[in-house]
Image (cartoon, rainbow, N blue to C red; front, top):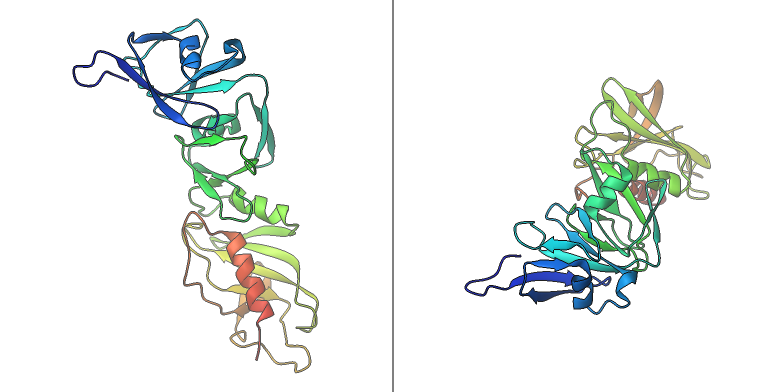
Length: 284
């Protein structure tokens, strides 16, 4: 980082593995990797590495005795990490490993070889997934930082189901297939277990149609096959009398409109929860 005002010294933010960034000042614009490590008390020095965090989120190792010029490199942040252990994590279904506790979104994308039109998300147990940008720095040593999923920016005709949705469905034991017909794409949840004693059958297939622009745009309603009747009375559930033909089958339309959707957060996990809620609360 360039000096400020008339101060001829050079400043740089250096972080330890807990991502605690502190400002450090050097008289010489050219510093050695070991000087950067010593600045944050990294001992023994030869068991640490200094890593320049570039503006685009990429990482650049600085060798112990390498002279690193702070002028005009665009590197305003440096990470100091131990080199005596490695960290394992998953991106989609791939098992990966990184030699430092901290990693950037940019490096994660490179390791996963993601296409440019895919975003990266961190799975956080008990919470909504967090979108990871290229310049975000993640501490792999933190509890629960183990899984990441990739998600295409926008699903259009002919695109595969976003990997985030695939990971959710497979990870929760759902059997499913993606069906395309007449430019429309639908996800069929096969033999979904229904609320006990609620309907005239124990399982049914559930169809969720994905609109153009999904996952930024929400699905609306869902469809069931075979036709469901309420147990005991044989009545059709409320707002379920219409039929819909798709994929060579006749489906019972459940008119349950979706008025709330958070682009970048909601996905099939949201729709499956709404389906289950609607089935459990069905009445004549």
